[in-house]
Image (cartoon, rainbow, N blue to C red):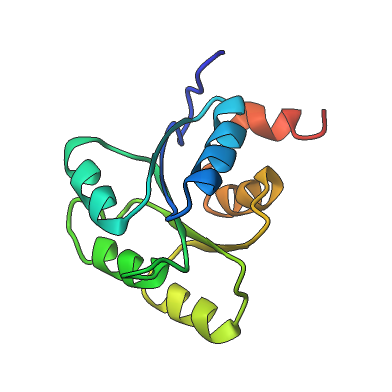
Length: 138
């Protein structure tokens, strides 16, 4: 597979369900992204320290800390605060979504997670690679 040489190459994916990680990772890897999937915000923090990422995708509902709380922490940390964070969730309560944007989250994807929904935000954030735009209709 040809690797992307674009603005987004490495994605950190956080979801407490392993099956979700596997499904979403496969979808993204087919598009040429490199994905590291972890099941807890704690593991995510550990890996952020040693590896750099261009995008963080995080599930909203997780046992100890939800995606918004995690995003708030990341956005408060100097080395990581510029990394775009997109939350995905089966919950689409406007209060949660508003809280997410207030702490600096860059997007909210309602499940089921699809590439189209992700690309919508990447486009909005000017992070879509040019060749993706041209191929999006194929």
